[in-house]
Length: 559
Image: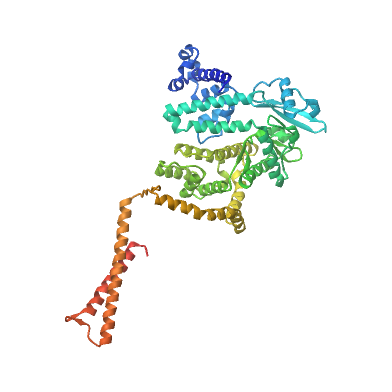
């Protein structure tokens, strides 16, 4: 790290640590051993100030807002992680404001010309100097191309990437320090959480990725004639500039204007929900932030989706597990719910399975004989995430983004039409997904795709087996078996061994008796041995042994 960067880090460290103290989190600074970084001791004496009257969640929000764009965006991303943070924190983080003063047009011109490699006037016939909207990462300007097409140009804030990267490096160091010193930080895997949120934020800084997302959505949504994805102008876009078709419509949050324009809200709700569910359950590639400002109702009856900086991706098996979870909830199947949760997340080895089952039973009872139309999807997801948090079940980020998307979708739809049921629309998608799972043609197609992989594995198997045997000969392989209830297992093995031995003895005895019978028949002599009726006695003993063996087998219940 160069000297300039070290100095920037030091100044930013002091700003962050001072903000911790100002908002009543001085004890964290002390626990981390960073008290010397606080520039003024007066901060410690006045650390509680009027903030004593505010909840911790409110103080966290104010703390993030003061520290600027990186922390605001991280807070907004954290608000999607209901599985990691308590409900009161999630609710407060959703209030984080992303509205900031716009940056000067001189900077806009410089960035656009640097990124596109041409003067502004060469690329655009008109370019409005006043931005339509300004946020922490960038701002949007309306413009007109030389062809006459109207566009919206998103321009990234100057030096925002350097600011974000510096803040993320500091947060990574702080989280690593916290895990060394604080037990709760280790329990919540603070460093892993910071890295995950940081990676998502860096992804939003890449306008090239957003462009690719928009192009993919345009292709995937061609099957829905009532959904419009704005066209992207690739030649006028880059990592810091994104030029897209300008779309004029009514935001779904503006219900009065929708009514005045004569646009039926139930129809809009149906189109919106179908589009989102198709993205989730068919494409496995969905809009991660479908709030009312990102969805417009167009004059021709279509809906337009905007802003593709945050998207979610679901693997085919994840889609099936999600549908299985919904079906298990509806079918009152506790084991099915636990299996689905375990496949969607990661149930820790030390989880209290008995307590988990009890909590799942309680969740299941909430939906006992409840009609599909009356189930609140958002509430179900919140309860499920709360259950996961209580039992330290780690939910993948794409699944939590899915939960947030569904909750946002339900909120938009409820405002448009309170009687609309998302689950009724979702049911045919889920049913088709499960039918596809057992479709012979699809199964054969999947096997066909995996055949090269299986062939390669079979070709490598002999070599791998030779390596394994060579290691075994050299004593380099150590095998340890841990069997629960070992004593019971060993007793059962003994019983099986004794029964096998008994069967062998009975078989040998029977063969001996058959030999005596055959011998006496050939020699035409009676079956007396030393005046003892050997064959009669033998038959009696063999019969008793056979009856006892049959009885013991039936008594075991395993025949």
